[in-house]
Image: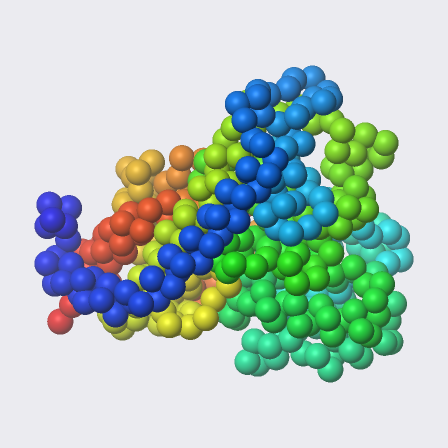
Amino acid sequence: MYNKFGIDERLEKIAEEVELEIADICKKIDKVAEENQLKVLASFQKYKISDAHFAGSSGYGYGDIGRDAIEAVFSETFGCEDALVRSQFVSGTHAINVMLWGVLRPNDNLLYITGKPYDTLEKVIGIADEVGSLKEFGVNYLQVDLLQNGDFDLEKIKETLTTKKVKALVIQRSRGYSLRPSMKVEKIGQVIKYIKEIDSNVICMVDNCYGEFVETIEPTNVGADLMVGSLIKNAGGGIAPTGAYIAGKKHLVEMCANRLTSPGVGKECGATLGVNKSILQGFFLAPVVTSQARKGAIFEAAFLKRLGFNVSPDYNEDRSDIIQAIIFGDKDKLIAFCQGIQAASPIDSHVLPQPWDMPGYTSEVIMAAGAFNQGSSIELSADAPIREPYALYLQGGLTYFHVKYAMLKATQNMINKGFYSLE
Ligand SMILES: *Cc1c(COP(=O)(O)O)cnc(C)c1O
């Protein structure tokens, strides 16, 4: 079948063998998806979602029952008090920015306990200079790195919390653009318990991007005060056209809402135009779509490892996000593979991605993103900062079969360009 697409038969055969190898893991992923599907369904039923909720509001957006219902469904599913689910969030970075500005005040200490945050947050926090960063407003940034084995550094966390008054801390669940492991939700729960025993007032926030529905529990189920994620990643199910959410304790969500809109307006305003149905439908599909992306990531790891590439995590390693890294150690190989992924896309398969200075990022980035929603990374996409060790981060896939084909196509592209040989 793949012959017609110019794929070497040997690659197809290897793919079939790899699929046998990963079958058990894929079955477990289906079980997680099933449990999450029922959880989401129950939330829809509890709030009696109906046609009326699909209608959008305009102008100020007062009394938008669809918007309120969406926020109730998210809160219910995530087991928390309240949520802010808005298309006015332009990205995950924006939602994290709003969360930080919502909660922090001048002279507060902000602590990251999963090492350096995701690239785009460096300018938000002021780790990298930028006009209007938190640093400019007197918010001080502290960081505790993860231990060599990827665990939390409990001693350093304790030392920081006992020597400095920390207002809020962030745990980044996903690996982001780094090679450390993702954080299991259970582990996030344990560290939050540990932190609250040292100082019960510290606000514990989780950057949940790429994490939703990978497990059957979310950080808000295990003590996180706030968590945040993007709707063009897992929680949007590939259908939500834009937006993000912040979920957690009611009074903290209110502080964030006052920052997103304005003090005194909070959650009451925000026209939904026509997006309610897409957000609801996307959230309904999200557990299964996330499982497709996850199975795709397992296939990527097993298939590419089998071909001799350096992958992280390994296919049989425990994970809590949908990101798969492949370390090429070489710029040209990385670019050829990435261009192969783009060529396998349903959208823009004819364009050739090139490295560029993407706004918000500190190094040049190459991205393969042949997506229905621009930049959507619950759809199959590949990003790589152009720097050592030339690691490509793959994520997403609305269907497993598309991911499988893309792996074959990208490898074939490398073979055709002389960067890889099957002999
Ligand atoms: C994607 C991501 C972000 C930022 O989201 P954008 O929508 O790309 O701005 C932040 N943190 C993590 C861990 C992410 O994966």
